[in-house]
Amino acid sequence: MQLPRGAPELPKLLHIDSNQSSTSNAPPPQSDQLPTSLFYQFGFGPCVDLPHTSIVTAFEARAMAHPDEIAVENHDGRRISYGELNRQASVLALELQRRGVGVRDNVALFLTRSIEMVIGQLAALKCGAAYIPQSVGIATRPQMQHILQASSAKLTLTTSNCRDAIPASDAVCLEIDRWLATKANDRSSQQAPLRSSVKIDPDSCCFLLFTSGTTGKPNGVMVTHRNICNILLTEPGKLGMAPGVKVAQLLNIAFDMAAWETLGALMNGATLLIRGKDFNQTAGRANVIIATPSILCTIDIDRCTEVKTVAVAGEPCARSLADQWAERCDFYNCCGPTETTIVNTMQLHSLHAKQLTIGKPTANNTVYVLDANRKPCRIGQTGEMWAGGSCVTAGYLGNPALTAERYAPDPYLGGHNMMFNTRDLGRWTDNGELEHLGRTDDQVKVRGFRVELDSVSAALESIPTCTRAATLKLNDRALVSFVAPLGINAEEAIAHVASQLPYYCVPEKVFVLAQLPLTSRGKIDKRQLLQWATDNATVPEDADGVPA
Image (cartoon, rainbow, N blue to C red; front, side, top):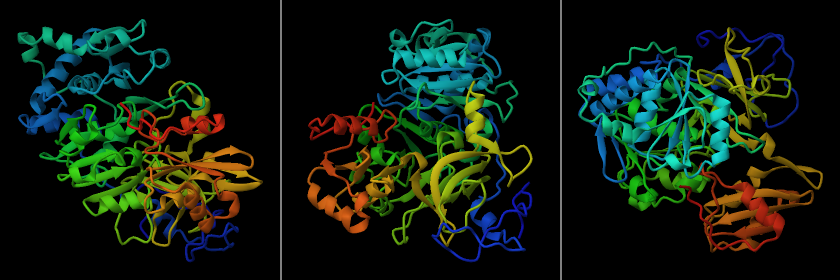
């Protein structure tokens, strides 16, 4: 078979049984001949040439080709065309350069979702710098202070309504709206060059995304221009975004999936619809919706009459939710941590599919299901998913030890390529799709037995009336689950799990909520749920599940 570009032959010491499917964890049979066909056929996405390897050139090409098309529409009714957005971003970029911002510098972007947010993103990128998005009102002052120090940000961009929330630092703070207002009638600003003169290295950082920091202080993931162009300028990652297509901007700007919304729209000539407090008002006008499953559950599908494409990622999706939307539009179930650039696997879900999977590697990307020794698992055998190819980010800012722990040289692509340990468990189906089987850190021991918490939640979500479920380890002998919405019978839910899974997987108690609480990034807030269960507090009947 023809191997992917740059892919070496598999090492002789690796033995893969590509001719049979098995769920056994027994070691693969030894063989003098190494069958490599399914390893490459399943694990390697298609090789596709990119039209651009810089976000700036991709956006500027769209702005020059369609200057009068609406680029962004704010929730307050304000609109800006591609031509005007490009001009204002160029004007601001010149000011940033005048203040010392240059190639490979970092610019903090601390504000709320708005047209100014988009102008700030593009201005930083036009300088060859990377921006660091944080949503004021969600990010705490200590979090922002940590990010400013860790990133050595050269400058902070904000807006006048957010200025008082910005922590003091050595970085200059510039209010985008007020500064642009002073330049409204400035002749020189009207003549700003519409194309950036900065030469941008495709492998330079375009933005820094700080993780939620559940195990300590947040770590900054360095995402490159090539990373972003690879997922957002190829199908299916571009989700059909094109001129005339409206894309909802629903998510927290500090979340990697928000870049799918904003940069995906702007690099492909679509119109970005920025939401206010009402998710449904924006989603109801959009053709493309990108969300976590928990956020999607809050959206009224009957109001989404214009929707053509929906993509979910960030947490496991219930089959019932996927089927509900797949009846109305193209529905993609996707997977990938921040370190593999938004998502690196996607599946267009069919109502007739045997099961809901996370699909196959996206263009120019690879997925390897490996055992504890980083050797390929057989088809159907569970292992850890490692990601390779153009999705692999440049590591953690200022943390070489953690980078070395999670990233490793890619022996299957060779050269200088790296692969990333997603810590997601998975296995290949017979037809070359990936089953997501939870995270390694979601595997717990209860009564001496190993339990995958996501499998318990999945069993609960198979109840026809259950839209979301979460399961947590309460102690060494008990699990506790939370389900939504109200109306589910807790005892019947427990019995339902008992009918599908071994006794040690059955939760001790099921709490029924109107809605599960969410983190600021739109995922189920498991820490809050565990605190409720640990404290034996009365679980409220409702929860404010929609993040700002």
